[in-house]
Image 1 (spheres, rainbow, N blue to C red):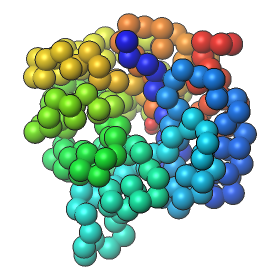
Image 2: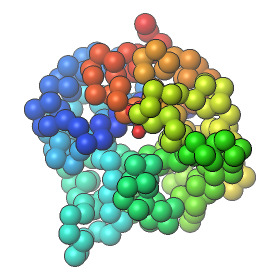
Image 3: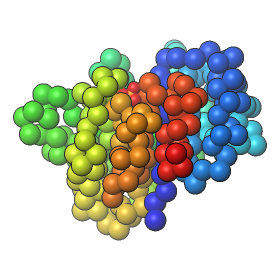
Image 4: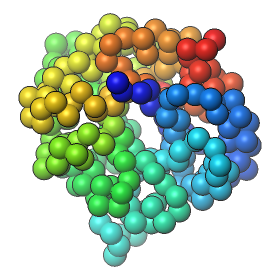
Length: 250
Ligand code: PGA
């Protein structure tokens, strides 16, 4: 039985003081949840987040990393660096990175491998554009992205990869895929993983992302295949994020 994994993606928001306040406010309110709670914070907040989450059940993630260990890559941060300050998860291939920072399926694959080399768990984002959806290509696009992202991984690494299905047209727009649509896309991803890696696909956490909020979380999470969410805007407010984590208690 897969448990829910609920990850906040703060994107380029929040200063260290905001981070500490947020975690202090959230910790006691999510301490009894059965879900895995992750906050993916900006690099400059990671160290503060690590300290603030000590003794809590909140886990820390970064939003990107470079695939090399070290060297002449001005401005980049490696997996080894993230690991050294208590980071456990790392978002890889978010659509904003693919769109604005030239990430490709190939760099995504390299980063996932580097994440595992550094004992970080990747949260790998895939999703179709509105144009692709309207052309009926959703399934082809997302299953190909998943196939290329996971290429060359061992079964055990695949088992430990989190996938976030995030239709690009639903990110930050207030438009959410219907729970049925999102569940079908996620099933297609799981079938693809089964066809390549076998039964391990049943253990892979596949989240939905794109305008998830407290008012739609429950419906999404009660479907057969959606294993939680990657939450952007709604993860910036303690009240809202807490309600998403505790979707089954309210
Ligand atoms: P959103 O962002 O929840 O604000 O739509 C989701 C994401 O980009 O991960």
